Length: 336
Image 1 (cartoon, rainbow, N blue to C red):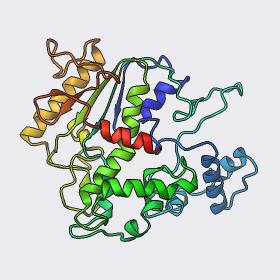
Image 2 (image 1 turned 90 degrees about the vertical axis):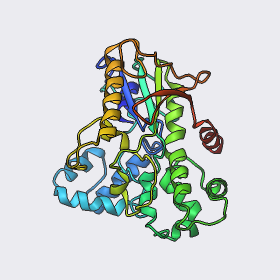
Image 3 (image 1 turned 180 degrees about the vertical axis):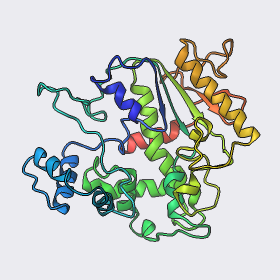
């Protein structure tokens, strides 16, 4: 989402010539809050910290005197349920007519306004939702039974549509979501993949595909479905069941992260890593990105609403597929 925000920022215009958005976008509901919510959250922090909040300047000056550890500990007091909403402090839309520079002038969801018209890679992983499902389940059961008992309210918080939906619609939306993703009528230790699919579609698919549609500059899209030996799911929760290629797993193929994964890539993982780095490098340095990163390789088709071609990365042999997320995208767009 961060690189996507730079595409929408007047302050960042002219500073880059290509953009890569991996598993996030500024039009995601977790990436930005509706107007007014950030101010209320800042006031909550000020109140808990014993600060006067007559003005934003008062809050800033006071919080600068608060010990860093206190602010870290305070962070957990702002969660509504467990560790949700997962992102509490987002970029905010500023007044661009104030005479001062502002990073973001238009709300990406309500008033999408692109500033930098440069080529972009926009893609996602096949089971992004493992990010949240891993902490809801263990190997045998649902850890938090209230997730079923209070599903409508909690899923709205976790998926971040509670701030974008009128309160009277929360139950109706929740019931439709439950019916689609848990058709058996219950949530138990065997529904972990159902939860993964729900979080993948609602938190990532809907907004990432939407971003690809909204951009006016060339978009190249990918669908990463390669399971490395190491998965971030082991860091997200205690569930040891296979949850798929989760949020962040593609980073194993791009960066060396010894602090998280002390083991070197195995031979197969290394081959996929080399492929992706070659593809990304060719995109950055050339006007003709290819699906294998080679100079004379097959051209990477642009992604549009009429030609929804995506680069499938599930082995060291890339291929082009049609967007596999269209049904999920349509469901969530209609729902919201």
